[in-house]
Length: 439
Image (cartoon, rainbow, N blue to C red; front, side, top):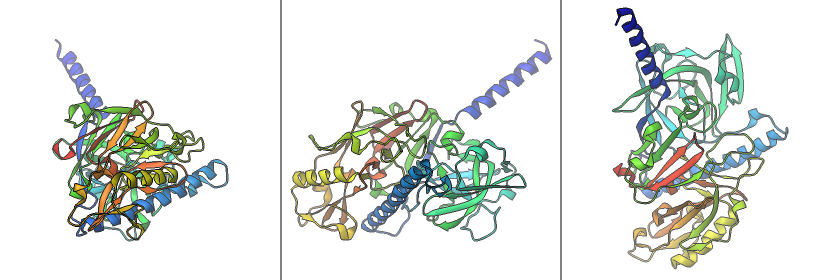
């Protein structure tokens, strides 16, 4: 073989390897618990998480109403509130820049913009800050950049060919400059990729000590969309344990590769008829308490043509939500099944509580499972610990709360010890009971 031919083949091989590396994002990552290291007791932690979840839902309802009004021309897209942030999101530590600057980002299935506190802008920041001056791979995104042109921002302004934005998450607003940077994921097996992100600062609200946000929604600016990640999964350890959870991307996101404690079941991801891509909707059609099917119609859980309602899986909502008609039926069925004295739990922020017999813990209570039924036959069977909590000594409360007339949220309390997979490419949602601390 001639030397020139060998050099050409070697160059083609390197190019092929580089293309393969850029095209795949196969990774296992560790998720930090929202309350890791917190001095709060479990009772205090649960109340705090419940309040944060309710705040998120108020903003979600407001956002849905505003978005529907925007579709009818009654309000502008810039007025749409995306979502609030509290102490309910798990976090992921990533390296930003070259060399990597470690930063902790809130992981959120309902947000798209990737964003971090940045020294590029003046003003008050939370340390530590990402410093673009210390990175050799930082670059501004020009005004004609694809994500600058197509991304959904509250406001956008081009100055000196820089894409300046404001972005509203509901209870937190950030402004900054859209830029491109190298992000490094993973601890043992590291993967580095180039991403567009927001280099900016908070102008209002709080993200509870994190450095920024890692959006993994179906929308344009998210990690999943930018890298065209075909699927991802996560497995959340029990909330009260405050342990590390696990997340998988690409080829690593395969439920059959990990030991499960129940069957793998699959349903489909529902497209938002309005064309918005805020959340991962699933076709919930009914609920059972044990073998008793609640008298609630599938339409109570369905997304409307205007984008209102719908059932989605949320990595950041702790407690979960059901439409009011389903919640009333659920409370009645649980009161009949549990056979313990019912208490008024509103002072603790819960809608249904039971008095535990003296000396009995919540672990000793016999309660039938809660079953979420999906179109096509898949059924998510939730054990007692995924919907009941000991809210205070001697009181067992239903962690799920009531929403509006339509719509439901499957929160991370329902998802604990449940390996869930979002097959974005094929529009499918799979799940399987799993001991998440053992995978």
